[in-house]
Length: 229
Ligand SMILES: [Mg+2]
Image (cartoon, rainbow, N blue to C red):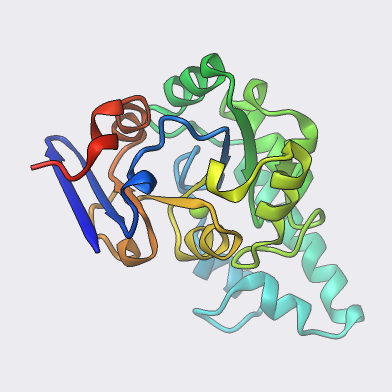
């Protein structure tokens, strides 16, 4: 297995790939982004949200709600939507998000969002963060539009909309579920690891600690020939 580590303080890029071509993101036609914590700064206190909804700590919120009878589930989903909308209105972009999206848009790639948030909250979040201009409405895939990550359904949905093969696409996210969804769908995976803990790096083809590092990597053709020192 080829491994590539580029230390570029204060930014680092770590690549892992069975095929060198995975390291090269310069020719990907479709880029799919997680939203919260990836394109926007992570502000969700999921344990507080779970407590507010009366859910068990440490377990995914959507899956806990889906396991409930409808009469219990629906009011809790309304409350979740309300909590998330309040958070959405305060969204700020991740450092380097605008520059990365603008560069990719200039290159003419297709841009999509895949989030476990609702479609309405996703639109509100992107607007508040000033990132809404980069995404067509049908390329913002929330939990009503596809089974939530780690299911690959949302990735596959976007690939179908774009008529794009998975090996021509990349999934970018800050959490395990983003990487699992991309891998299952067959795309390259990029792990945005701003804390630098490499917690999920084994599930990613490329690990970056900033979106500006990803932008440099995505436009750098020098790594297409093989391992770097
Ligand atoms: Mg996230």
